Image: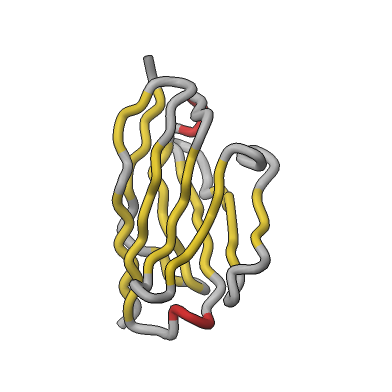
Length: 112
């Protein structure tokens, strides 16, 4: 079974930073494109970033470009999302995804 467990969320003030992690198992993490998505209450899911198999190529949604960085460590089967310059509109549940699989998310709340 594919398992994706995100962690690292929390409450942070506007302008602050957080780093999310997602431990993956049940598939070949080394070769799988991986993504982060988020979903705010009452809103549809929003794709925010993808990293490809060799880590050389990353793509971002315009809403987070220049502020968020996606990365991966294949030695520990872990996906990361470094989030800087956080805004209240970044408040959402964040999930890592692999193909159509979405794991348990982690809540990020940006508020003063």
